[in-house]
Image (cartoon, rainbow, N blue to C red):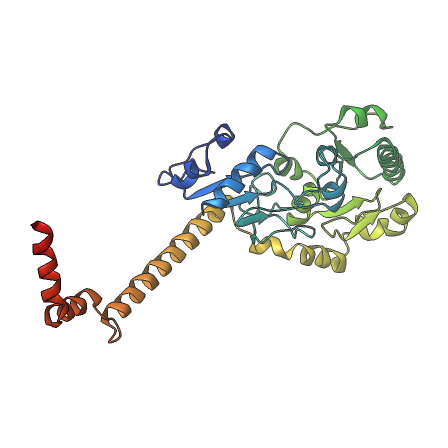
Amino acid sequence: MFDSRAEWESEFDGRKYLCKEAGFFSKYDLVIATNYSSSISNLICCKCKSVGVKTAFFSDGIYDLANSIRNPLLLGNRRVLYGYLPFDYFFAVNKVVLFSGHPQFFYYLPRRVVNMNSILELPESDKLLITTANSAYFDNAEYGSLIKLINQVIAYVSSKGMQFSIRIFDEKILGDLVLPDGVHNDVGDEYEECLRGYSHVITTPSTIALTSMYHGRATAQLIYRSEPASVSSAWNIPSIEAFDAAYESFRLRDGNLMSYQSASIAFSSDSISPEQAVETVLLQERELYDQYSQFRESEAERILNSSFNLNLEYWFRKFYERSIFRKYFVFLKSFIRQ
């Protein structure tokens, strides 16, 4: 993000400064954090806040309610994702629902979500991609529900003759899938490049859904947990019966549902790039500082020019020179010298 910004003097891996006093961070204009599960990063941001140094947090994917309240990395420390935000600015991919604190929110698109400058064209022939998030389940019960649903979907689209591939990195999931012969696991390219060959996507709730919808692919989400998905796709698959009822509209990319899908991610069109995000913060802070400086100077000038501004030293001297107390003071001085 900072490679193309020579005017920004940047330093990385600030966690090595954990033991520094808060005043050490006063030399920075902005401190950026990206890992909320890191207590070291959070404590450093608290130190920055105590000395007035601005901090910004960048989330790396969509906010997901299930991940917020059931992520084992946070539950082990009896915490909730974004339980308290000590940051001045928070850059999110989508709306953060549960949080405490008072950061200023912005939408932005990380390069891992959308890296291409234009929307991908659809391939000439329809083809389905079945994929999952890298961490698609939190416990064995959820895993069992997910595997059952994916295998039912695979059997169903196979029976319909729909061309499809999978994109699965999780070896445990791969080992439990029941696949027809010749199904390709398309994991060779980055996701956006991979998406060029597909018109339809079925995925678990994740950032992948947002990327697919952004590029105009008919996108269905596998629903296998009670928490709602954070991004509203036009199609959801809670059961194979529900998928059967919606299959034709999904296959034909129903116009009304595709319009709904586009509208549900309208916030992404207002999102900014990571570089623009940092520029926004620095520019805003510069403008606020300039306003503060101008206000302070104008107030000081008003005081100096005010008719109520009494030069007390001048008036005390005049009083002393004209008062009867002067001769007693001079006498006292001469007496002391004797």
